[in-house]
Length: 104
Image (cartoon, rainbow, N blue to C red; front, side):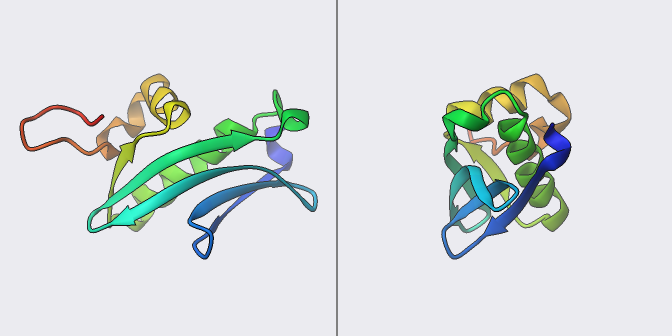
């Protein structure tokens, strides 16, 4: 099912969008600042839940951040934060505060 999900970055709307066919099935909104990308909200349309849309969004967005290499991740969104916790190979992207604490 997740193979049918196509994720792209839509910088004009500050979000990654997941599409199934011609429909936006979900998105992961973000805010950019110097050296950081803060994921603020992830949403999947009810009718597309259980089809891997959220995971496809998280994986694509975090891979994009990693590939670009310009920013660290500030996972304000509970979904993105939990997804990173379940996928330890993405933890190195998470911003660490000057006091050594992982944010948030």
